[in-house]
Each structure stands twice: as structure tokens, then as C-alpha cells.
Image (cartoon, rainbow, N blue to C red):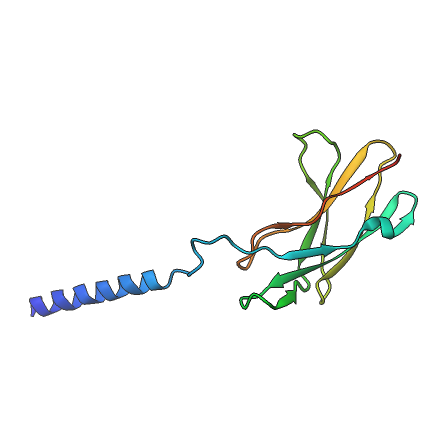
Length: 141
């Protein structure tokens, strides 16, 4: 009786161990995919002398590798870098959500002196890594 219990316990442990190995994701060794951020040049959408509209769309590439779905009603961060030194950090100045089609519109500003750099950032989630949009530099000549 003890031998049967020992054999059954050993087989059960081996079976559970193999199922745990099989449950690991196939992409564990691969890098996570990024979302796609398509932005329009804010210089084409000037509101006032120092205010511009930044328009864009965030999409997610699906498993099939062909289909893009909108990043609908999700959080996006607007970041600003106020100095041009290499040690300066990006600061989040605004958080907003995309529309149901994955589009967003926000205002960015040019400083009276100096240069400001702007970008959009989408934090990583749901199997996607953090994605950063194009950097836009605004200044007066």
C-alpha cells in the first residue's frame, strides 16, 4: 500500500512539474512588442503664436502580425524636457486618454526664451512595452 502511494505521489509530482513548464509563455525569451504612435507635425496646427496642437493615434499590432487595433480609451502621458543638457529628465506635464479610435489631441507650447522638447509616452501593459512618440522641439527664433 505504501509503495502504491509513493508511486502515485511521484507520478503526480512529475505531471504537475511538466504542466508548470508547459504553461510558460512561448515569447518569454523574446522582447515585448511596442505600440505604434503616429503623430502629425504640430507646426501644421498652430493655434496662437506660442500654442500648437499635437495630434496623433496609438495602435497595437495584434498576434497575426498584420492587424492593428486602436488603443481605445487608454492613458497617455505628455512629457516635457525644459533644458537641452544631457542630464535633464523628461517630466510628465499632462495625462489624458485616447478616443475610442485611439486618437488624441492636446496642446503644446513654445517658451518665450530657450527650447522645450515634447513627446508622448504610453506605459507598457498587456504584453506591450513602453512606447515613446516622436520628440518635437519648440522655440522662437
